[in-house]
Length: 101
Image 1 (tube, one colour):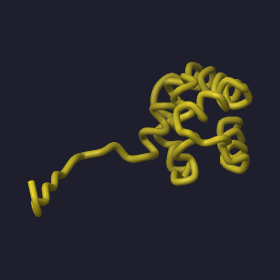
Image 2 (cartoon, helix red, strand yellow; image 1 turned 90 degrees about the vertical axis):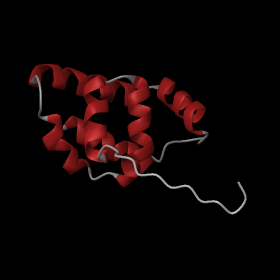
Image 3 (tube, one colour; image 1 turned 180 degrees about the vertical axis):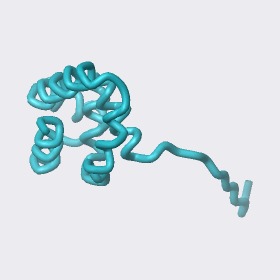
Image 4 (spheres, helix red, strand yellow; image 1 turned 30 degrees about the vertical axis):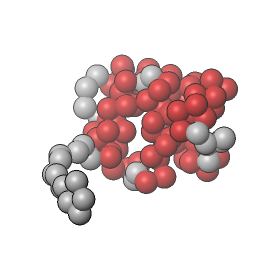
């Protein structure tokens, strides 16, 4: 269509809620997604959303997240998913510190 413009409105999830949901999931692919957006998200805003659900299960998922963040597989998967050769060390460290709290 020449000269036409189409717009739409869509509802999207808040970034902090999305990060909390992905941390609850605790899969490697979710940690890669979190790393991709971590610079844009206020991690302190994630905390209230994390506190929903079972505290023991959450602690296990966060510990698993720390293991994943330290793995070589995460780096390879991140490069494969996002085409970036490396995750920002500062971003990865900030996320590790947050998960360790």
